[in-house]
Picture 1: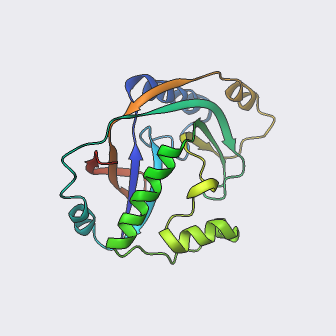
Picture 2: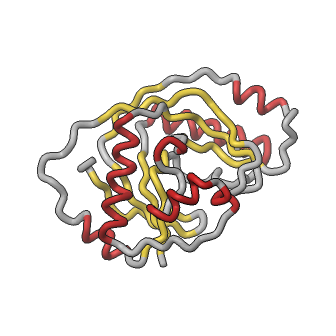
Length: 202
């Protein structure tokens, strides 16, 4: 079984903004979950049978590539008591629109139609009926209206909710637009991200 992810990555302006915030977190709190991860928006992660089969279904893309679409990086947010990490996860919102939701769903359907996707994982998240339904259908719980597109800074453990950094972070004003030309697929092994291929057919 292999864990794979579909990412959207950004231009230098957004990437550098997020990297600078990661540096601040490292300086204040030391190494934290997600801090070493590349700057990206996760469309989905899946546990699949074979990477070779994933590559095969994307082997012959349409000759006509889609036009780039725009993404907007906006206000900061925090997932308090994140059940996945046990910490508070700091992130920036990506403004949700019809296009990005369509892209996520299109590729989830395509992969589930053509590959064996493992759907036996048990997690606290799946106590939510919508997340459970999505996981059973696609192998990824955050699909549709419940999905919050975002770019993660880090998940900080043992952080008091009165810590002044929380107020500082949430007061950040930011709005940056970036054209997106491709989706990138990675193999994930713990904190390691190995690039597999890119897709320009949205």
